[in-house]
Image 1 (cartoon, rainbow, N blue to C red):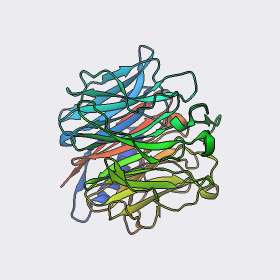
Image 2 (cartoon, one colour; image 1 turned 30 degrees about the vertical axis):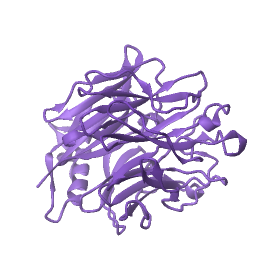
Image 3 (tube, helix red, strand yellow; image 1 turned 90 degrees about the vertical axis):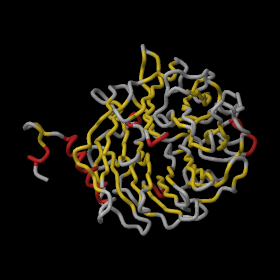
Image 4 (cartoon, one colour; image 1 turned 135 degrees about the vertical axis):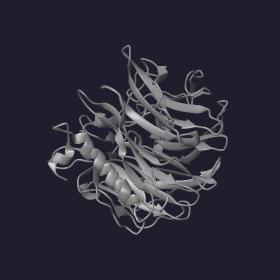
Length: 431
């Protein structure tokens, strides 16, 4: 591409460079007589000013997209929501604003739309002065976020310990959710302590008398009724994101496990309601680390197939992998390395109709950290890694998220610092 191709009115336009890269990625995904990308539709269509952050995308009824993020409102942290309809994005709506809201670069709010149209959102609320004493709160809306129910706690435990890293998906008429729960660590400081200036979270528990972090599941009905809590694993990593996806008639959850010898590989469990399998390794990486890397897995699935993506750092070598399952998560094929050699992780994945997947992650590179996307085939074939956006390596750059809605892909990410904030880019697919 010549420099002239990237100028608008004689001015260099890096946004157009990023758009063309994404367009090329997706046209490769749907080439060979399939769906092609409409180049004229790729642009940043949602732009919130600094210091907005912590974006999350979900897909609701009819394929409409739902975006949540956090930004100050009159000096108070506020959870905001916008819905993308046929006429574009709605005006931002405030779900909840509170000085007690726990705002964290890695443990961000999420949303889900239930079968009948009820929206559910979650966020974190501080409950004590301890650094990681916070609870998962939920609220419901039956009118597309114009009004919201009174907040209520997602878990039975009321101890001043860490509860977070929630994943929610539609399930039955309502939703299912997983979360990390430190109730067994009560008295340990609520879930550990962060390494100053680093990206890790020191182990605050560890089995024995002090207990450990756990991952749990329950259902949520449209009227707010919560089903029984189910313990999925009683010893997990302290602060890596969980993942939850519907595959066929069941659910598959993934999370970073934690063995007695501090091996922190990705585990999966399969189930529905109150019946779940025993945890099994998604991939035996053998990553031994005495702290949490704050880098969880992601899943994408449909009626029987499943794609996964995760980060690992065995022997000090950061790596991003993908793997595919054709039996609902019971087994996975060989892991496929996706990154370019210097990944920060923070992955997301979206499975495509042809069985391949697109993985999004942060790559440190040799100069400016970047949000990259790449197509991955189950046989290990890789597309060219393509640039979505430049960003920064600090925590405030957050975790890029991605969804497919109808004939479009949406990417959400954060540009830190002055002039930055939450961005969403759309790339249209057409026959």
